[in-house]
Image (cartoon, rainbow, N blue to C red; front, side, top):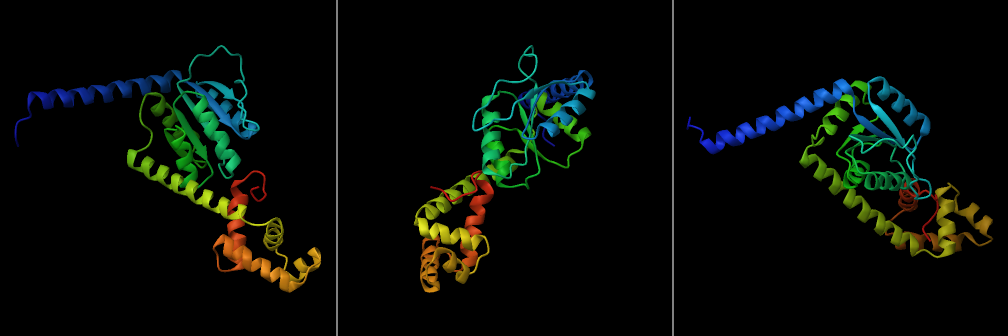
Length: 256
């Protein structure tokens, strides 16, 4: 084996020293606890997590969840300085929740960890894109959460760069798809939107015709127009398109 050069020894030594410092800091945080800000869309869940982390020796400060796109001033006594790490808890199952999480992550500067019930995919990429360092599934236990918080607070990256990039790419693609779907839905006339809503509700063509006071043939013509504009081949495809939008839009309605 070739002898390591002086530069190589210095580089290896430098990396070892950095790892040693990070490990020492993490052990110190684990012993003394760290300052953690906790944000959660469900106050009872966030308060329970806050209480659990307090029992582990952390100084925990709550953050108000955004309401109508507005992030209120932090709760608490206001005596704390910058936090060592932040923990955001959200289902991330609706567009409004993704937007609220994005606001918290971008506006409150700290090293963020996110816990969510959302499956690994676009929602994870959304919070990583907003600045979170790692994402944990909701099933993660308190011991593991505590370990990850200490690691992230000590300066560790939290998630492998390749995984992070892949999830952010999924999020970018999901945003592009969502925009395309919104534009297609916007192209519908008011009557076509009404027909689509009724199809989504499970009403057959004959019932829709009766409710709207028009003939079944007219309804079928409007359905064909909806399919063409949404670029799908079946009523089921049209209903699925609307369903995807309703799952992410807080208004639960067609885009204006």
